[in-house]
Length: 115
Ligand code: HEC
Image (cartoon, rainbow, N blue to C red; front, side, top):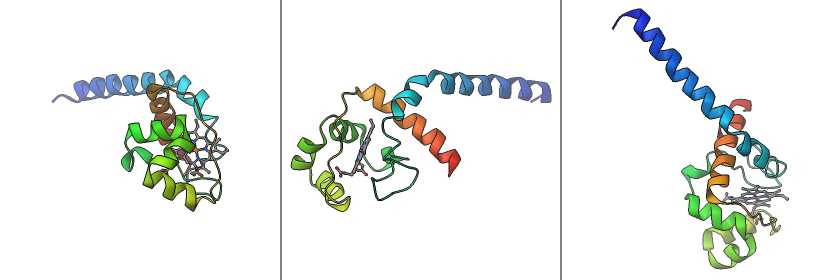
């Protein structure tokens, strides 16, 4: 391939990436209600949400977020996390799956860089 072509392709890919990040203003705004307790590492307040989609399904995360107490009473993994973090009740958040995805995209992007 000609060098000029490679550069043009790289620029096109780069501009798509930047657009994707700019679009995630929703994720940034909503993540602010999680990142007080959820840091880039497991803290004594709560576990990290960084890369959480590698260990939990989006549905699992959704169930936990919209009604932590109900999910803790039904799901053994959720109960384990609850017990590990001193049985502190997390606040329930009325969010959609797509909003949660935006939050996690934002967290994966930003907290990863800060680490
Ligand atoms: C007041 C502190 C607090 C806030 C704010 C908070 N959480 Fe939590 N979260 C916790 C604690 C503590 C746990 C550990 C489980 C428990 O104690 O219920 C937890 C656990 C979780 C888990 C399970 C993690 C795992 O490792 O399995 C998910 C998912 C989660 N929170 C999502 C969210 C999302 C999304 C937000 C923002 C919309 C949020 N949390 C805001 C305190 C908080």
